[in-house]
Length: 461
Image 1 (cartoon, helix red, strand yellow):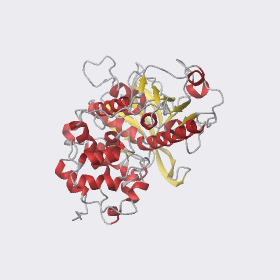
Image 2: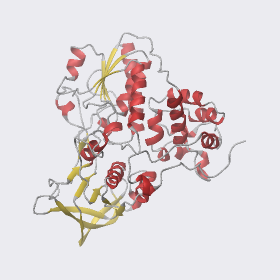
Image 3: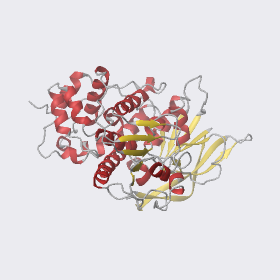
Image 4: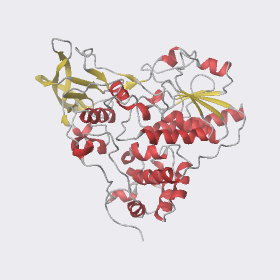
């Protein structure tokens, strides 16, 4: 009998006043009984509407049906047919805007907790199974992947499963891309990321870190000198944007990228860190996306009284509802309809305060959201000693500036068709390098599409 409860099984979490002082994972995961109970809420619809909302096309009803029967390992195998990073996706995908928003159960209650079930199944497999995936038989062809973030890892994993000799080139010293440097430990433990990467290595994927394509080696050299028959560019969007207001170069002003990289990759939150980061006693985060929430929640854990200033209202916040809720629970204060115009300094050149203009909403702008416009002569000054800019990122121009024949958008994104093919023969691209900053699962979907297109190209070459 289906479980007809209108509510999801609640996710066990650390208490807010405990977790806002540590970097341990906030969500604790379902128990086996909770997973069985939640899986039985699925109606196993024949037309599978939830699958249409999944960028990597996981057979969601099938894996949930196996979960409901207690066949957890079979459920994991079904997920793994489509996803290279199930334990990651179960934690950071915005299911509420994708698979779960299509769920029939959501029409008269809460949708099935698809992401929570994916996480449970993946975590259980990782805890109990020590056998690495079997390496496929080689097909004798070589492919290169630039960037070891979600799109690059998804592309590399799918190509490796088809028998390709795949090498991933990563600029940083640790693989994982934004999964390693951008998403905090309390949302995505790094041992989870590294476990997923080790699974890909077991499939035969090679990862070369500390290799900056465009400096260490060019795309043309990879293809002409090193024998790679196709290249996938999944280099992400790691170039931070700023507001170009007075005071942005003061001590105590960070881009969210720098702030989070120091914390996540360099463990700056540890007392003995070689690269400490200063959140100060009062931090102001500018922006309203998931990266802004991550930055604010990190600053709070470093002991700062933390504010988020956002130029629209709460209704327009682009961050996930769960992240906004967690931020509020952890004591972070939101200042809506507020837009920075100047950062002031003390006599030593450190941040002293941030001046913001009050805003009001008018008609929607190009993004479809209500457009914020300034209220004349309405300003507020917030005392602070740390400002973190989290207003978006762009693709790094290094690859486009060092690759002949690669067409890009004015804002820096690589131009690619729906399969990821660029203007350069046998060169594909996907994820944030094409679209600008988006979600992990959309980047993975782009990597999977390009892997299929690369396979067809090489077979028909």
